[in-house]
Length: 463
Image 1 (cartoon, rainbow, N blue to C red):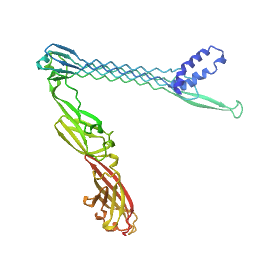
Image 2 (cartoon, rainbow, N blue to C red):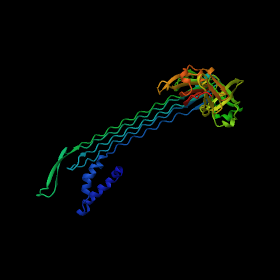
Image 3 (cartoon, helix red, strand yellow):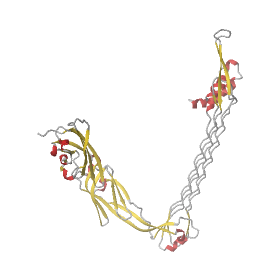
Image 4 (cartoon, helix red, strand yellow):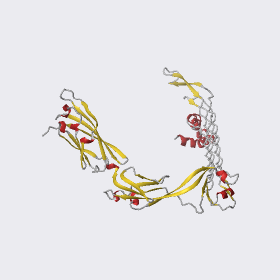
């Protein structure tokens, strides 16, 4: 609403100036608007200066491959300079106008803030040069200039403008009620004040851009161009089943002294790369999981050929895989023995709480039926309610891991022999209320997850 009012204000003021030359009947509302409502509302809005536009970054130099044969070669692979940032605009000085004694306090308009300067553009980087050679001495015939472009300067911040000052700090306005001369006639004097507006802030200068980097040199002792690298692939798991995918990686050694290899006066980074050899390896997956691959066909697998020629396989986070990897004759094979969706790992539930005393046991079932592949360890916290001595609260009777010898598994059903734990006999009696919390740690390969299972109830009497 305020912005619309501000936009319409110049038209309204123009209208008022124009109608001041008309008969009084045509300008009755303008003085009230211009001296009161305009001063109180519109003049409190001063315009801040616009922020300067950032300078464009310079274009990087061209990358080139060169096959040398002893003939002179001159190359300019320099990056372009970044552009300067634009200066911020100065803030607009508010229209302080005139001040008349009014029946309200007045806050004089603030000055406009200066706009911030735009950031300077970054200089473009020098281009990269790859040289294929048979005789290393031929590189001395190559003159290259691969300097980085200059950084653009940041724009200057705009100046803030001065706020308006009050013509009068304090005044009194007399207000009368009733009819003069009558007993109900009464006048009061009320004090009103004016506060100066704040000065606008100066805009901050924009940051300079970054200097472009020198270009780089790579050398290859070969007459043929290198094939492109393909060290990493990401495919659906179904695309890797018994279908080898080729991985490749060019190995480079880092050296120092690029400028000593090239013609005198060449400008390029002194660190350079020298090609050593090309590594190639094929990879495939052998599927031995009982579920068909169609159940997992859209799951992504990332395969990477490392610098030491080892193939690294990464499966999706929501898929647990157990298997083995083998490399032979430039073919790496990963055999999948088990594949389990993560959501099926933590589907344990209490099946039965039975017996009492040393025969007390808790039976837990794996609803996903994956326990033949997943390793499971249990930790338990057992609290018992002591009603015998008039104490109605629960007391912790055991907290710790359940030894493996007290856990038996029949396919997907676990039996936890709680009665064999070091728990007082009184806490194992029939009728005792217990609160049990079991934490199951499930693991397969490098993956693991925890599931908490809670159960409350009374130990039943033996039949």
